[in-house]
Image 1: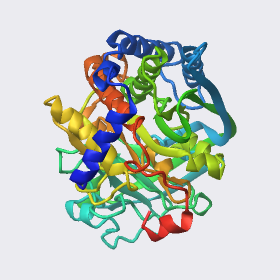
Image 2: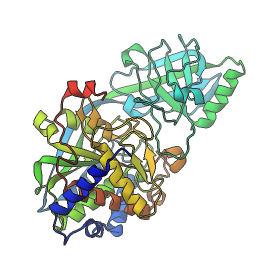
Image 3: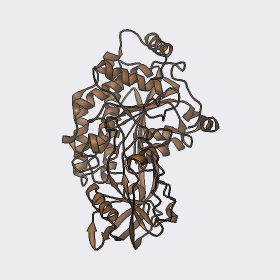
Image 4: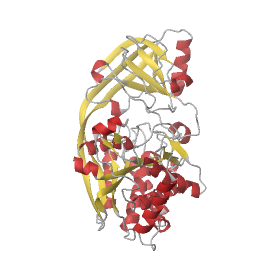
Amino acid sequence: MKVSRSTAILLCAAVASAHPTSFTSEKFQSLISHESLLSDLKAFDQIASNNNGNRAFGKPGSVASVNYVKSRLEKSSRFKSWTHKFETASSNIELLSITINGKSYEIRMPLGWAGGEVRDLDITAPLAVLDWGSPGTCEHPYYNNNTDTTGKIVLMRWVNCHNPGRHSPHVDMSSSALGYIFYKDNYEPLGVSKRSMISNMVKREQHPFSFMSMSRADGLELTSRLHAGEELIARVQFKTSPIKIESQNVIAETKAGDPNKVILLGAHLDSGANSPGINDNASGAALLLALFDAINQGKFRPKNKIRFAWWAGGQEFLNLGSANYVLNLSKKETDDILLYLNFDMVSRGNFGVYDGDGSRYGYYGYPGSEIIEKLFEDYFTSMGLPVRPVHWHGDSDYYSFMSPDLAIKPVGGLHGGDGLLEDACWQQTCDNLANANVTHLEINTKAAAHALYVLSQTYKEVIPLVPYNHTAAQMAGY
């Protein structure tokens, strides 16, 4: 860790002087209720059951989830709450199919990539394979093995690997390929928390489609056949109808606390298109509700204002809710945010802490992120629990607070780990109540309570209040 001894001493001193000794982090943690966490997870699971098995963005289950959170926030004398509404263009997928040499394969296009620009298509073309995702590629993310992809549909491995340096592994899709089909796989190291991430470099108007995905088994089979020299011809049929999705983020903020120093905590509320989304991410939503309940009891008095956000459009719509929220803040409102904490997939898997100082991956957060990382790391260590570093892949709502085009803030939080390794039900129908470990979620929630207690008492000498400055952020490499 890159947290100096003097900074750690200053942090402890700031907390000690800011809050009466009669109320401690331990007392705040004791207000976290296992039963309440379970109750909220049950409620989200029931919402999915009542709405075609999902709580996906733009679907009735998402609306019901928003209404449930709003109902939990009502009539609080210590918080004010509101909704931040926004609209986005998307598409209903009416037909999506692929046949390869006459055989039909199951295929998906995540809804977040099926925006209003995607047009209907019926194309037949050769299938080509790019071995992106091989061990060498994880260290060299632009590797493409010189395959001619012109006029072809490209099959690629959607791999989980960390890449040293300041950028996530990604695929340069600026070639003249007709489109891309990915299959999910994995890659060492296994002992870290990470997520699948593809950064799409295509302008949609230049290609018939951006990408689709298929199962790992099908991808490996087709890759093997292509490497053996077999010619494969794929026909992709895709038909959509444009729609507008109206949605809303739900926000709650303490009435107490310095309005010029806001601690913002967030979790995406929606699920995947085919999943109840209990671990991913009703668990993060329930964690925030538990912290809300603990503060609402009135025993905890924060020095810094605390704001909770349940984001819409975070699962398959590329952090749409949080990005829209940040874009609509005034400069003063952005400057007033002291830091952001993100919670994603926290009811099973690793005790994963975002790599704030970059010591594990080389991709670090804005100054102050290392303090947040150490707070969480020290907490889990004190509990005798293993801590796993989490790579900044840009695939959750923290990205909206560490991007020069949005906002630059100290960022941290918790994430349970890669779906393929830590959650076999990730984005599947089995991510229901039975998939959640409430004791694991309770531990993570108490860790969040501890970090929130400490950070809500600190002053800018410990977590510096960073005014938004686009030019300075770019010069600093953010």
